[in-house]
Image 1 (tube, rainbow, N blue to C red):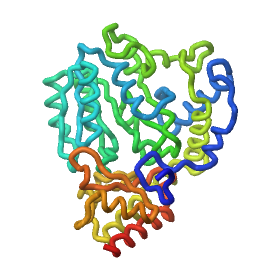
Image 2 (spheres, one colour):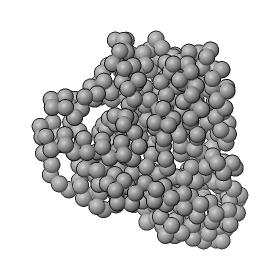
Image 3 (cartoon, rainbow, N blue to C red):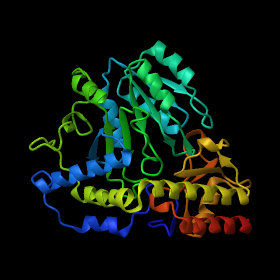
Length: 368
């Protein structure tokens, strides 16, 4: 399907027309114009407001995975250790990425429906002595959200940087960067910010900047496209990296952030996502679905995962829903084919839209 009449995938989400209109302006060269630098600094300000932090956000042209690669490759040497903490597909993915770069990696895994045990992480971290510890805030494939303050405490105890993937949570639920003392907070435009997958961003602490600036020359990164090194002093005249940025995407992000921060307001945005999650789960349970994970405190406000109904394969269920114009998401890894997901983030945290989708699900079940 080229377009989705009722789009409920957990990203990329539907993009409002007013954001897409930013792509229609024939902007000049971002490498030459002071106006672009002004726009970039305004987006940084709005991101800091959304994150309730003074930490520097670096905004790059490229989808969210770029932020993960860039943070990892910029802050750790191939002679140093990385500890990946995981209770989901993307948490383990951090370890896979690092291994491909030749880093020394240890993966500490927990069941996909269980919280992370900080005592286990501390024991492993003391033995392994990592330079950086990674974790995921919202595991989109299973709809699980983690409380990461205890993992941050572990990182500080062993003198490691703390790096968090918040791609599916930032903008849809509070991500307390300062409170959790996150050194590298990673996000993207295509989830709760309701934009195309054109931009990634990384909040960088002063501790992380020092590590980035003093990393030795044998790092995996060559200081290239995804590297954070050259972005420290963006905002000062003559200090923008040699990098053709995406002016249109940045203007679209500015419009999105203004709507979130200044028009709707953070409290209302987060309440809207909580209401959307509750509405979705209550309706699914009324229809007989089993929500994943079972523990309510582990369920994300931005995405709901549920078991594929008995008597259906995921492929058959997905096909029947598409016949009704509804598109959901499947899952990845060990839950592939077992779970489906409804994305209620950004523009999709909308009760009318969700009601249409859930009505269609009920219709499909009754046809079986």
